[in-house]
Image 1 (cartoon, rainbow, N blue to C red):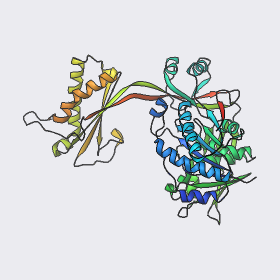
Image 2 (image 1 turned 180 degrees about the horizontal axis):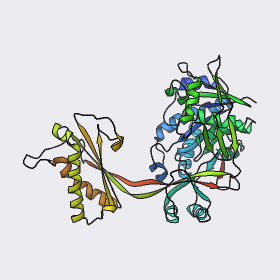
Image 3 (image 1 turned 45 degrees about the vertical axis):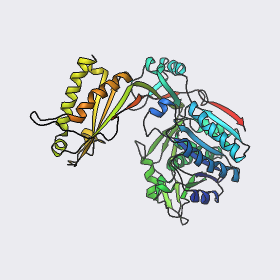
Length: 451
């Protein structure tokens, strides 16, 4: 069976070309698949169980896809709904879908795939030695697990297949691996697993595998032992290079991809340019895992944060910014110890120099001489009160601290008032582990609705 999967964008909420989408719909795809999540912006969204994308843009883009689905009468599938894929964010996305169904006067069947995990159950798995750390995973303990704000399991093909098999019009999945969203229906339809998983990896970010990543929409057509990938935007192309290069994206090894149930090996993959502008891909191999495992992601609160910003243009201070910041740090440390009685390990004050080394810090190799520097000061402490107190201690020093003994005090620039801002809870990832399952659905659940 020739299965066609239409991918409108790499992530719902970052926009896509509606004209290209319409071109894709003319190809009569069997399913529309879109990713809704990411950990690119750090652990806070999983920590809070909230979406990083705006509700209004998410609803607007989802509306267009719901209209497209209704027109073709095919399934519409989203994974990692609400960015982080917790049950809370899936329910948030479900509410948007119900609103749109009413506004569009659509009667539809919806299946939710829930992926949030019980802290008690995950702790039991840890105590029974059924949690295995991935590379560079943080050390885990029962205390950390019980203190997690949210834990999710990443669904793969097996769980998504169960959701598709409910014959729902719309499937809203919690946290899912990117490639599994694309691979699931083709595997159901008899496509070789290696082919489906390889296509899933290449197509996970939409047009990122093309010459024009901003165009968004691509179509993948599956044969049993290979797949065709092509963009549907008129000003976009794919080449063997752009297609094969996506194996490097967010992947430590460009020749392998570890997923629930096995490992994809593309060392012998062949990428051939076709006359119709597509690239045909064959030759991947799928190595089945005899011990079925899924990945877990979890977050916990490690403190609170506040930030302050000051702008410095004085040439002598720009040149001596490291000396200035070191003096401010030492003075702040002295005041904190005397007035707040905080131990050194209970708080942290970081300086980032915007325009000099704010991105790479000590790894920066370019010796730049900017004409001004924005100093971003990040305060981390165990309580929000301590953060705000430290930020207020910093305030006069950031505004007036002089590196010279016998000169008038400088006055630097606060771009905003107040110059310090409460960030709130600081989250960290504390689970980057895999867990063995007897049955792929053991820790996942389906909910079915008709509206």
